[in-house]
Amino acid sequence: MDPARTTRYSNAENLTMFPLSEALRPPRPSWDEYFMEMAEVVSKRSTCLRRQVGAVIVKDKHILATGYNGAPRGIDNCLELSTCLRQELKVPSGERQEFCRGSHAEQNALTQAAYHGVKISGATLYCTHMPCITCAKMIINAGIVRIVFQNFYPDDLAVQMLNESRIELVLFADRKM
Ligand SMILES: [Zn+2]
Ligand SMILES: [Zn+2]
Image (tube, rainbow, N blue to C red):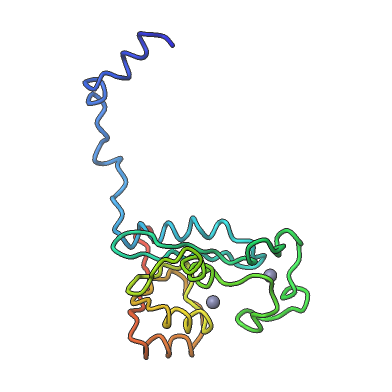
């Protein structure tokens, strides 16, 4: 290592010579923005051929569990098989969930918490998409108190039951939009 270089980079005074301009610095994200962006990152691991969904369960600004839509642990997923029964049978979106190897992101986040014995009652669920009716029922019983989601999913019964449950349902509005 060149000693001159080492000296240059370990000199704290030099670092202050280049303060990040206020104008160039991106706005600091709110907590909702922070965790929603993480849900988006999580969704990238999805193995679904149709839609990539990510979920993050948070309590006291602490991530308790994450999940994306995909097949159960150790089971071949739709991506590996390059096919999904839903596609083969041309099942419309939102119908016949059982015709797929994958489980939903929310379900995978809930079961990850169960696997690790993590208590999630009182937590917030950040999800890239609004939960479907099956996930909504599980979310209610898991004791989630707030759901923040980014993309609306047309499921009237899910909305109705979530409202009845008094879970706070928040449609996330991206500051970039
Ligand atoms: Zn599938
Ligand atoms: Zn679902």
